[in-house]
Length: 319
Image: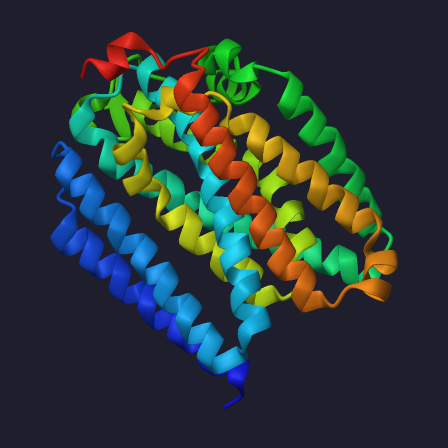
């Protein structure tokens, strides 16, 4: 068995254990998640990611392990921006708090499937057309600029989104949650509840965020193992992070700008890849990326604490 196969096997085992432990012991169906439980679950998923980081260090060396840590931090910080949009979706459709956990879990599992497909397609394109890396770099520059200068989250209305309009056009939608069901029957015909709509929106919104995050991670590393595992760890930890930050996410108003700076820097790195490889080793570039990510995210969070500009829906905070 090769080193790569051993790593994938260990990853599969640790994720399987984590899901069973999380769902079986840390989470219960249709129950409100307390702040204490959210802290425990968040710590649990972060600890698992760090455990996998240590395993990679011992099994695959320092370079791969640092690439994983940088990619995980990139994905994790972008997840906080996801959470703000998730909050708006839950508030807009009036989802009851006891259904949050189950809806988030299914939406996140769907998002993982979509991300794996997206990453696989991205690698196939890179293998066939190497110049696409420059397209990714330009895309990150554009995205970073738009993210830095826009405040799109304030204007986002799930009921006006194209995804919801498509669902409304092709599917019979109910205006209630069906008492926790995703599909009910009215006049002997299937009708899809608001919980079903929210799950689809969560998965779709995460895929939209992945259009930024996955090229960004590819700017940090081209190792498939690192990209797959860092994405899955970050997305699986998103549910507990949601419960932990849903009341405090409004304090991270300028995190978006910090992430935007990171995206721009990584975009420049992708465009100047051949030039940088001449003067800097890959390992040094990985360490530098890690430092930049930590510095930008930390500074943007600290700045956000003292300069607030927006907030989450009031009815959501008061729940």
